Image (cartoon, rainbow over all chains, first blue to last red):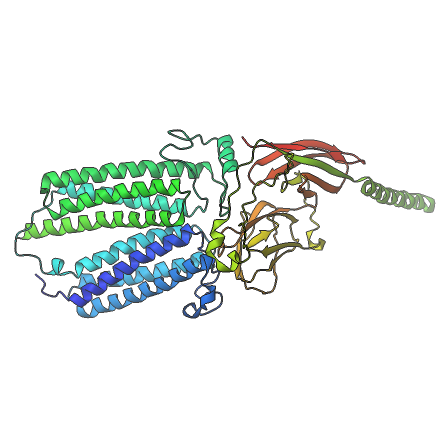
Length: 331
Length: 241
């Protein structure tokens, strides 16, 4: 047992994770407002030092893009400090390297965001979104690894989590990550809503994607932001996103039931699985609301943030289950 | 021998002169293609640009009602404006380098005009008549993408495009409801329909052509036409289904 818990380090890691979550929200607002290219230069902003941009330029889409850059800089700074702190003060070499990995990832993420602007490559936004989710999980894992719970476990022998249940949660979490990749691809098409109704799709269970039908959909769209015309690919992608959402919901519901059955209703992991299910229900409702509000920026961004939380919950559940099982085996 | 050379020279001269006269005659005989574009059926309702309210510099210019989207500019009798009409499949013959520049103005936090057509190599000058910053972001599919900041009162920006491309999008990401589309052609035979739905493509050499009409939302329509000295006429009717 490692008696190396440092509350200040732990809370700093929590702060970094919380700032990262907010950053994902702000990044979501940037894309939801179609504002990613509103400041055409990087690392400068309108030719100014990024940290000295006069306030009168913080308007419209530039407000979201610029504040996203500033918060990203803060997260970069926090992660750098955390990595150095872990290297100097934590006794575990693997944690040192995890801190270094977080540092490298946040640097790569920052450069990727900058290149998306400088190279004017919308497709880079998909990777930028995917790395953001990955980094959030890593930042939260670092908080868990520096927690008292991880470093000074209770002397009471924990209950092991059956391998089947752990595998199930892992696969559902991987599915959620895949779903987030689909979502990032959808958002970075900059084409608005490919299907404008829910739960049906253009009034059908599966929409017509013939050239004539797509031309008709485009003729009737009156997009506020002049989004690109939709394509059959985008319509099919949204249908896959919907089907994956149902599959994930069923997967999480099964996880909640299995956890209750195998671990008991009072087990924290059973309760976390229930909370996960609740999160998924909210997420599906937000997905529907995104369509019903014609992709209102705030609603679409809330959908992004709850999606990140759903991924994080699955990942944390698996981490805690693995740790408990390991400790149970060691006792 | 000398006589033979003289005859050959005369023949060449005659041939050259004939070509010059023929070309000149053809130019004289070049006709205009005219027509009217009509919309059948009810156009979707345009939407008020409510995000303007969130940006004080822009909303200050609209003390009354906010402007609306302008996807369907339709007259009382169905006359459809902003349709690009052009000859399809004609050889590349751009005169864009010597053509007068086309102008896009950013005024009232809107692009004016919203639909434009130019030739390859022709300058597109973008002005900022607003009291606020804009970014001018081109989103082409065939040409190179560009994104430049334009300060209030800043110098005009100039864009040119090397390749033909339909409806190349200009947008402002600071004010994401601002956009315009510029169709680029590698020949001068195109026109835009006006508020009365009418269009005129001037000085088209006689011959048989495919005439195409393209609307940003309603797609394209083709017609086979023959242009004679007196020109040609061709109407198009688009339908919202």
